Length: 231
Image 1 (cartoon, helix red, strand yellow):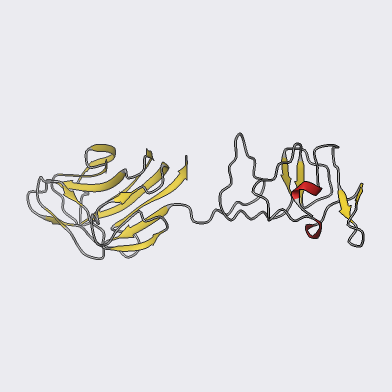
Image 2 (cartoon, one colour):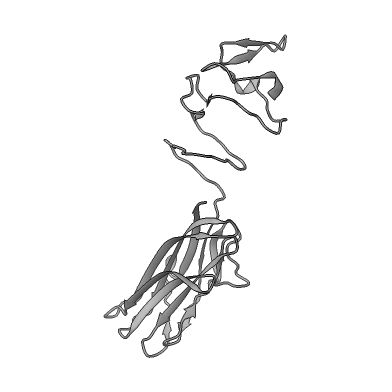
């Protein structure tokens, strides 16, 4: 059956079944996967509502009961309501970390670098060049997050900041040094719209009076990442 042999634009719940012996169609029934093959046409248009996975009349333009698999791109104009779980594969996202301690000079910003990747689905990070950057290969809005620890020191102030394209601060956490023998810990996050090739980096600063190291903690410091959340 090809696209030219089936038309579903009339009737609230129109349906047809192909007689495999004669090749003719009869009405008033549901269509099964074996009855319809639209794989050879460039476009298929249904002027009306369509339900997949149930014999109940559709209530919206596309009504799907059960699981739906989209292998390439799905474009939706308007509001989509999901009453179950949506699994989105290959969304642009990246999380990186540094397995080495970095040293911050007193009173000078340090751009943090990252030598390892937990995952990167869209070429967002490189461990070879510009290892400080997360670069958007896909335009859209992203959630950016980071976790940074600085070794214990009671003197002065500290901050970490996200910089867009090396110049614009889009998030900042500034505070006094943590008292006592505890490290100063930052967990910074924000959301921002990126054009293709926009990048974000983290800079850290301290004025303890001397050099101060970052501190490592498996799976949580130093970590840096971004995830696509929409157009």
